[in-house]
Image (cartoon, rainbow, N blue to C red; front, side, top):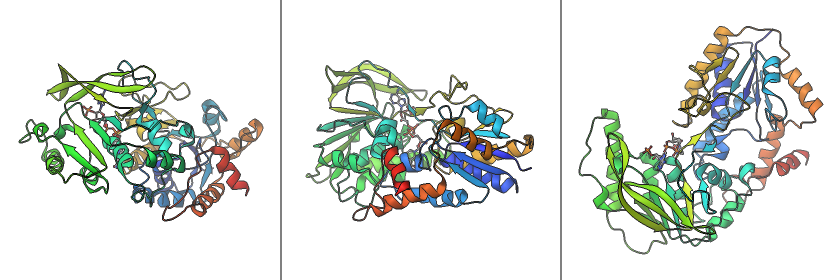
Length: 434
Ligand code: NAP
């Protein structure tokens, strides 16, 4: 009998693992179980809506899903519709590919005031993820502060700064487009606790901010170092030099008249969020960097703002009783192996780092362990899962069902947009029945 493997999560790490398993074992059967009706995880719900070329990888994932040895079980939540223990008894191996979706807490007084959002929630909202459909952030503000110097911070700044025309070819969720494009935003601050050369922006993403139609990036030249200092590899030096060159370009005064300004503010860490009913400002402390760490100097500055977006990385949500490594905040694992028969891949294995393609290696590692140490135990696999779901009254969504949702979204698109996303699970399920 073929090996039967369940992968929990239909994002990039789940699909790359399925691909690696199919290639390594000519017989195995792979079932991909996803809590949402829609597949592709971060490709749909995380990648910026104006980065459509990054989303093209979903065509490769669709081919994997179309393999006769792969079955997609969308709208099935492990924990709600089937217990993990039950799943482990149904399959020879289970792979956890659920990502790291919880925002790391900002951890300063006032961070729970209305008007402060984690990037995971905010990005999910503008990408039409059903869990965040009702976030309804109040964008009737003139100034927003984004904390963090990674690509997520850049994504958020760009989405807030672009004009409606610039977003025309995107799949920005309709509810978010309405709110963003009528927002009176004028100033967007991107705040880094370390210096410009310590930022984690990739140069392509950073440079994009210099090409916007109605917004100008601004950097205080006094915050830019003359040259790089400290130990680093040649590769790292090259990347940092590139970013510094872009910041120098941003520091050259631009012709006045931009509707929006994106200010980079370095060497500043959040101390507190101020406001009574909602955020009115953020208090920051100037820092200096010692041995790669930001240390407070005691000097304080305050920025008035009605919106704070904290883009300081993610951690895993507790996943149905499995132990998280206390330091890394992801599933305790050894090279992706939690224990025999149970594996983790992607951000659930190694934390929120890297790009989409980084997940390929995770898939290979997991597939190698599984094919080396798991033997067929005559488990029922998908047949058993179907029975459990039926008994529990769940409504699994097949890949053909997803193609109907996909078709309905594409058909509903207006202008140059690639699709108009459904942002509610019920709307997705209704589209299948039409
Ligand atoms: P990230 O790259 O790890 O950046 C997190 C930023 O938050 C860092 O600047 C970090 O500063 C800062 N930070 C952390 N804790 C903080 C605190 N308490 N106070 C102030 N600042 C704090 O994370 P990310 O932006 O969430 O991105 C996650 C991954 O997705 C990355 O690998 C990223 O490249 C990838 N991604 C890629 C793209 C793309 O390729 N277009 C788009 C989005 C995301 P320190 O450096 O000082 O710790």
